[in-house]
Length: 238
Image (cartoon, rainbow, N blue to C red; front, side, top):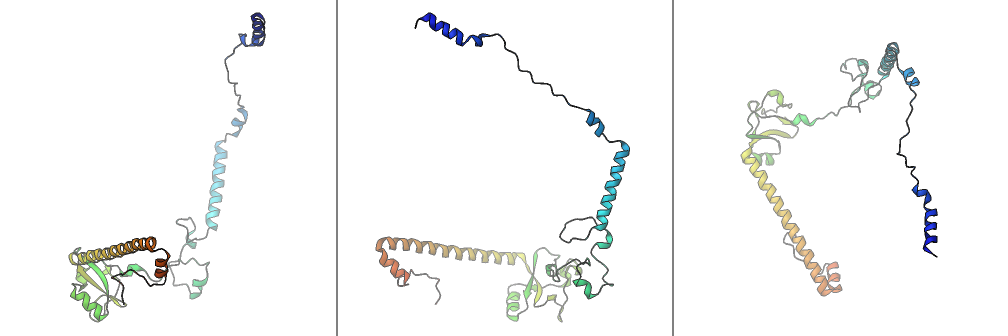
């Protein structure tokens, strides 16, 4: 094919690409109808009417509201809040769930709370078992007296025949923190040391088991399963 023929073919195939008809891209204008927006605007009278309707609906909802003890906050009439005047109630009201009585546990841990004037001391409740009580007195515990308390109202228990603050089988005592905290730290370190030693022996036994299993194979595993070969543990009690 001659060059002239090739040029004619190229010209005919690309003739439409050489037109100077380029136009910039223009976004179409968006027309918004504003008539219906003007119609939706509320007049002052209409706003007042809607406000009164909302108020009426809210008052009706509050009037019909019932007390729900599971809710943190609620709006309801005073007549349905938990009752504070129990003089007009009978035992039957306890089992009538429509009567708004707040359910509350009989026992509270706050009964055992008391506060000492001297913050150098720690207050504790100690079992009155003679053996235990003698041990605590030997270690430095002393009885709490009214003079030790921030106020006499700060303890909610009564006293026994000897004048000690008691609650069932425990008695209020105090001990200086320098002695008590040192003893607690010693007990904590002893517990950690015991745990660490036990874990160390357990890891050593596991390593020994793995070694014996690799060296002796099934013979060792059979003996270990039958408790015929057990590694010595110094803490095993007989």
